[in-house]
Amino acid sequence: MGWRQMCKTKWKHGKCAKQFERYYPGLKDKLQFGTAIDNLGDQGPVLPIYDIDLVYLTSVEYGDTINGQVTIAGVLPTNEEINAIYSFGFDIDNNIITGVAYARYQGIDRIVYINATGNIGLGTFTLTGEIEDTHLSTTVPLPEALIYETEDKFIDFKKIAIPVATSFLSEISKTMLNLSAAEVPVVATAGDSLLIYDTAGFVFDSERWLKDPTLTTFGTGVPTPGKDYLFEVSGLKPNSPFKLYLDDTLMLSGMLDGSGSYSGKFVFPSNLPNTIMYFLTAQDETGEFAYNITCPELIPPNCVGGFWIPVNKFGFLAP
View 1 (spheres, helix red, strand yellow):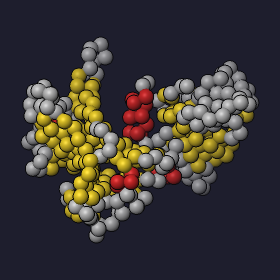
View 2 (cartoon, rainbow, N blue to C red):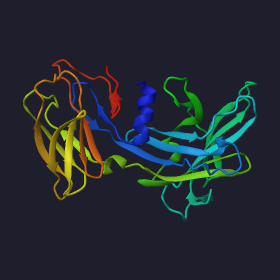
View 3 (cartoon, helix red, strand yellow):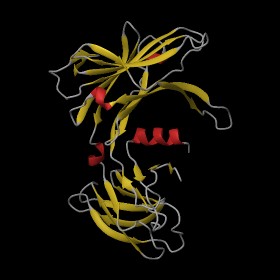
View 4 (cartoon, helix red, strand yellow):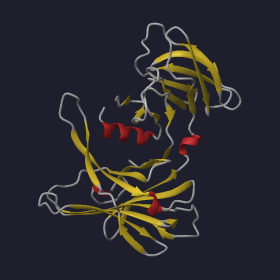
């Protein structure tokens, strides 16, 4: 799976484990996240490019920018004039008294605009971004360039994929937003220079990772085939049964305590090598899960510095 596709997948789910080195135990990433799905076709009697299908915002606690995506339920026409404006309106302090009314939402303090204008076939199409401070009535360009991607769908895997949607990807400076609330109400919009045709509201949670269940490994995180592997789970449904999987193989069934936690061990299969990564997933009866990865080998004595390996439920980026 490619890097961008991996990132898009993990961002949509809002959950990710990460290794700072391939020699270190996996850790739950400090993801900040918010999303909304609006696949209702409720834009009214206008083109599907004004119909919001999916929106999300994601970042990490230590990051400088927030990654945004607006996916619309249509493909941009190649031989027509396009006049579309997509936006994210932020109530940065979660206070409806401050800010302005925008798209039927109160208290909006910052608005990020994505302007898609021109004719693709004639080479006049442009995609620009800007952010408005509604308190100061000032608007400045976004520092990072915006991009758009056509989303394809396979109706029949024996045939060529069909373009069905368009996604606009942006990077929004946290400094320019100046978010002060842990949970920030956001409204996403799609429209033109005259009207807003579709909206989707959601909450961007800057402390999302604190609310997600956690699966912790101990020591080096390297399993020894045929020996006990220690782990700890927290944040699942209290007093409910759970199952622990190594990749797709059930390793343990147990009962969570009154806080939704469990400390224990399982015997790592003797027929599996410990030189590769494995996914660990603890899932309760509601379907909620905690997640991590095993470490494939011991820390070399001369290992200093290195790189990060983002990991999600669908694959990992090997060094």
